[in-house]
Image (cartoon, rainbow, N blue to C red):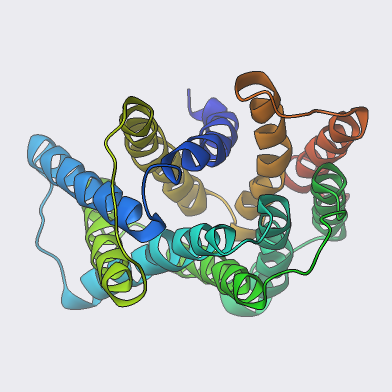
Length: 286
């Protein structure tokens, strides 16, 4: 089962773009994210009680868990949602955020002391090239500066969160770590909601289904898998999986919401897949 975690992570994380597209049709971005992480926090609180995990921890560990929660769930997710809501094409937002493995690979050495080999760099470049081929650059019109800025902040946040989480190791049980991260993210989104948007939530059938999927499959499933992969593997190798998210999202869009899938998209998916394989599987020659 553990061997399937990278595959499951990519599938679940990619599905967030499809369900997120449905959610923002019936809710303002930060109101939806605030509700999501309030329910996620409650869920992980229940899990902690069932597993009899100790909720008390050193103040430093709680602070760092909250910090990574704001980076992953607050600035990263909020930045992407906000950018798209301001008119930045989702493809461009995804392309910018998919630079994360490049940035993580560059910083993993000086920050974590990891050795990033030439084969990993080759895989990283192939992965980015494949993702860029799928997303394309023909967006037309002018790109909103505020959207580009928000997506840039999201990129920096998810990179910093990955590196910081790797340094944390396993000081807290996974359910407790996720609880504090979700609580911090909920508080962040509520504060931003009150500051910049006119919140609204419409509990349509499609909204409830999409929100339920994001809570169960993404927050409980994909994110828990991500935390595990960061703990047991290198930050640079784990980050490379994000290259598969835009191509797999494109395939899901074709399957489930009638979005166009071209031969170029398929070629890009194959290139990105090979790049991830090179970066995460091949060993350095002795």
